[in-house]
Image (cartoon, rainbow over all chains, first blue to last red; front, side, top):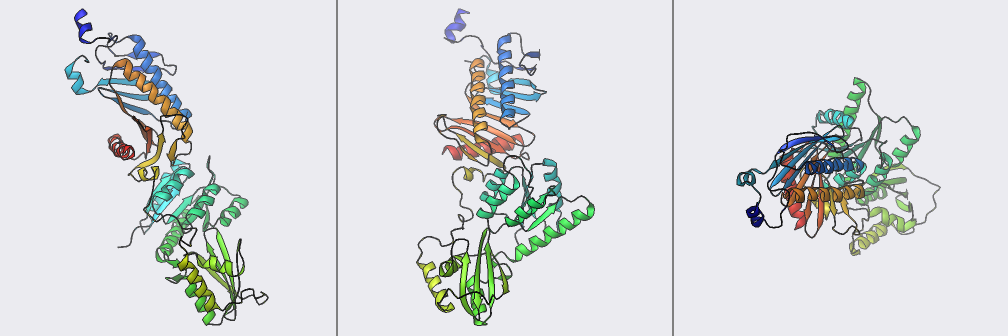
Length: 103
Length: 357
């Protein structure tokens, strides 16, 4: 553990990128999940809440949409609106996934 | 081979758009039919590329059809406009005609109505094809030619001239110009103003013998003076003329990318106004985009997923993409629903690169 901390100084929480899917209801509560258990529940809930808020905000701005695709340097999120809630897919980009833990 | 006529169809009802697009694409002349669901987008599309005809509904949220007509008539005086509406209101009909629409159609309800509607539109397109230059009815003749013909023939007539929302009258008596009038001018000034209009419509009515002579100059002298004044003018005389076709600036230039339906540039400083093209509610969308970008950046930070590159959404009517630039802020671009996600990504890349440069 100490070795890992020395390799990645200052990092806490996520050591690798999660893969999986989960659903949230319209309040942002996680309903079901295939995200690995090592991913903190709070983090999954936080992602779900942010996604639902983005869908709701778009509707209020009269730009409603049903599918969201987000690309990060090393990660991809796809979310589909579902009766006010959402189903969210988390997928590390293939190359980064092969490398393993994020450095 | 003659270029295909282009029709812009404006209606807030997506199903009606689909239906009428299909009906119009069946016309014998096979026009290119583009659709839009808001007045702001219609105006932006007309600014981006030339169309032969606008077919518009009247009752729409935000900018209604009459408001669209007022703007379109002023900016695109040569565009043929047809109103297609479910409204059975005589006042609307009168106001629409006053705005210069060429036809007012109640939305067809029977197969016969649809056939009649198609026949009328086809006929108008054919006429438009043959009268794109000069005043309608006198192909390749200028207004000067027309006046010379009337005067040389020693005719007595009243020439009603219109260009979009502009109207003028020229009174000719026994081959001499007696008077002229526009909304704001009279006499020689009005005559020169009317002659500065490079295209439009005219009607020749019987002479008005009771009109007093206000213009004393001979018609030859008048035409010569007018031509000289037009030559000497350093700025274009035709005040109603728009930028030459193809000249687009700012965000409108980004709107020329295939499939782009709106563009919104959001500066980093919230106090700086946003810049938008073809978007009716830019502030609402800008506020949402800022909020969404901040939320997605927070997710990225929590996951250690690296820098947020681009976000894209696919909706029932539009798709959009959102990307941040370090100095210029956020760019939010709308795309037509016909674009596949991969095409959205590719186009967004090009649009963003152009904007960033």
